[in-house]
Length: 137
Image (cartoon, rainbow, N blue to C red; front, side):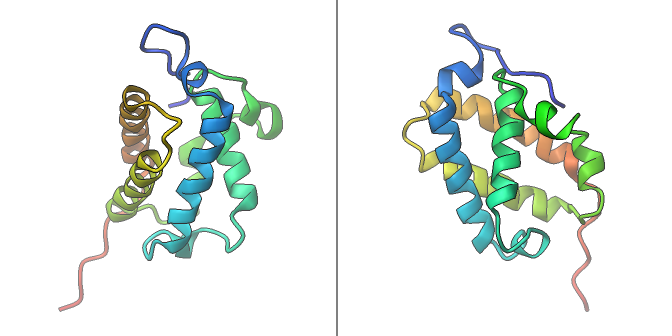
C-alpha cells in the first residue's frame, strides 16, 4: 500500500499538490483527529511527531521524496498499527477527519482531493485490524 500515486497527467499527485499544501492538509487533519472521540484515545496528546511522520509517509506515497523510508525505514503500515485497535468505526472516523481537512485546504484542487481521498480510503480499509465492539445490552 505504499506505491506512489501518479494516476493523472501532469506528474505525480505530490507534484500536483505540492509540499506546502500537503503540510497544510496534515496540520488540519491532526487538528480534527485531536478532537475526534474515536481517534484521540489512540493518538499521543502531542501530535507533532505523528504529523511529521504522516507528512513524510504521504510525500512518498503520493510520488514525492521518500522521506518516510529515509528516516524510519519501510512504512509497514499495517504492522506498525497493530498495537492499536483500528476498528471499522475508527477507519471511518479517520477518513472523515481527512475529508474535512481536504475540504478546508483550498490549495488542493478538487480533482486532486478526490484522487487522494480515494487512495486513502483504500488504505483505511486495509488498516482495520479489529471488529467494532458490540454495544452493551
